[in-house]
Length: 256
Length: 278
Image (cartoon, each protein chain N blue to C red):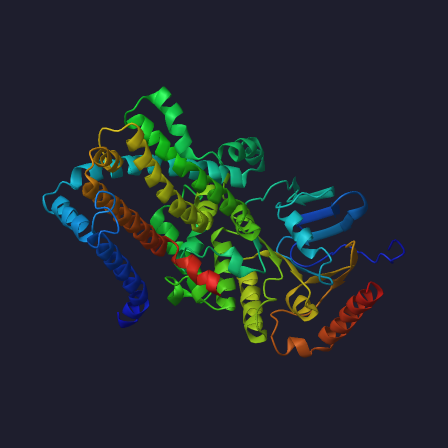
């Protein structure tokens, strides 16, 4: 604990200094309160949102979409990534298409998706799934192609059939790469959740941020941005915990 | 290029039963194409009798592993044929298990030792979970690892890891083991232990073994027959009948004049071959 504190202390000091600087600048009139309210004001709003439970509804809405979109996007990406990584023919079939679609910023696809799917949950979940899909796919393919041939030959000589081989060998052996993709994609998924709510929203954190901005309720706007920051941070912690749980063997074997 | 080498190949006529289990018939394999093509194997003839122990020795990089992979059905030969009990081998056959030199890569690091052995039984619908566990535990006991069942492979020493791989091969109900320098990465004493464990299992379970090694001592100590390969392209230069009595003893067998004589001849041949090829 003491060591952790020593490691975290310098960064914490920078953070506190920055907030204090902003506070002083706002108080001294260097920044307009209508553009950047004092951190303590934002803090007060944040506290109200938390205490009277206002935070729950919009946050649950956004997280539900993120969860569903992520589950769909990541599942499809892992299945396709394993197939592409294991069967060179499947790889050859889809590789050009993926290389073409991958560089498109997925936020740019929200307007066309609105045309197809309207402004409801289907569009938002699809945008999130698309954003999640590519990083997980690329990493899964890379992981699956890199599985040691000795491991694959071991399974083959033990008579393991291709589908079991994918599930029992290629999938776990690629897991470190899949997790790397997941960590990237959860951040992208959150971005798309917020953007799609901003473009076509009636609720959720993204909608509230733009709604508060339009209503000149700047402190509320910042409070929701802080909430997003915390959510992103916690999601990352969640993934790190999952990695420790599932990749215990990888960290050990890689070190030796 | 090496056509002038004398062919002294004579088919083994004893060792185990008289039934041929594995037969390689003029097997050839090349890698690359055009100018860069190298012939790895050229007209390999080998025969392993049921219950026999055949060692293959040759200089490093002479294609021994390629030969074994073709025998295992993990790789296809360009020329010639491989048959197992008279049937052509085109994919890994049942009851034939390949044991790799790189045991660290061959065990599943995310599974415990017990689960690694169970892995070989999971494809069998006739064996339930409880029986799978029981059988695997018994096999771990056979290789003296019962107290490490809950460990992970990377927590074990090299020799113990290779024991897990052997237990797993037995779980797969292996009748024929194809062993690719399985003990070459181990320290000398551990290697002796595992050689004796292997000989015991071979005798008790009536296994047949094709054993590739670059260690002449190991080949003579273990096998009924030793096939000597030439360097690139690999051909069978000679097949030697070891003729040492069994059971073999890690110390006294190696002191017998027959052992020393064979060792002298084989090492001489391999070193000569090495020098003439740089």
